[in-house]
Length: 334
Ligand code: NAP
Image (cartoon, rainbow, N blue to C red):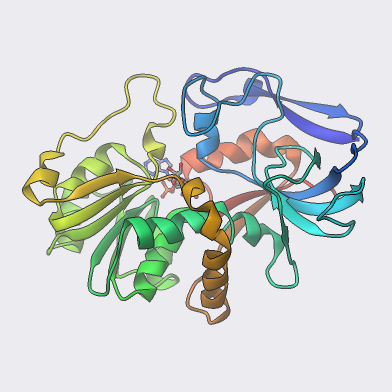
């Protein structure tokens, strides 16, 4: 049998438990050319909140009655003449929040658990890792000596953005919620400084941590933090709009930046990015990230919770910050 989390009701504000229902259905037989994947881990991402809205975006919204969309990694347990995947292969793709996914394998790829633990394929070597890699290198165009500011700095994307910028010889300041996370990004990840947005005045803290201004601001949170960062831009600075988690549950109007004239004065740019645009180059990027991990230059942190029935409360952790690094849910039962 297959436990599935079905999307039941479009949330207003923070999703509650009645947004989904947990249902149990038989695992369908794979049709010709399909496989059954027993899912081990599900990726929990802030973007899931946007997919629940009935609004135009970079991918269509989830429809009521569908399995909740999610990235995942698991093992092929049955095939019906699939051209690429065999029983026993580990694969990653868009399996959704369910224990078994039946798929034709489109947009799924093989992973090797002897090279890296499975959760890493939906974190550092998966979508968040690719976002950090292409966001800071291709969009941020960093070079040695640049001063980089990143928000959501103890999260999946931000923690990698900061570390990649350090590898490339930048000075890196991170913004995170709480003293422990700030200590973590400096002591464990090697950031040069940290700002605790939950207890500090951002403008004052930016004066302390970025007295010379910033060349790149990698924005994961939007809102007031984006606005404050805009006041610190140096000449030709780049602002990368990766996400705006502080606004995703906003019932009213999204809070936009007031200080945008700083772009004009400093000949700076502000640009949005979507990781899927780089899909053709994921392989090369994952290889380089893997080399950095193997040599100890890059740390990958996954925060793993258990039980498909615990999806709603685990999802909330993205917004309360009650997690460190990449949030993952283990859905295979021992
Ligand atoms: P994450 O950072 O691992 O998790 C979200 C974190 O955001 C939380 O842990 C929390 O950390 C922080 N946060 C929550 N509410 C906040 C608020 N009101 N103000 C400031 N910080 C808040 O998530 P992620 O996967 O790395 O994603 C980070 C951002 O990148 C998200 O906005 C996501 O949508 C975006 N993203 C974009 C793309 C793309 O292609 N453009 C791809 C992947 C992700 P604290 O404890 O520090 O508050």
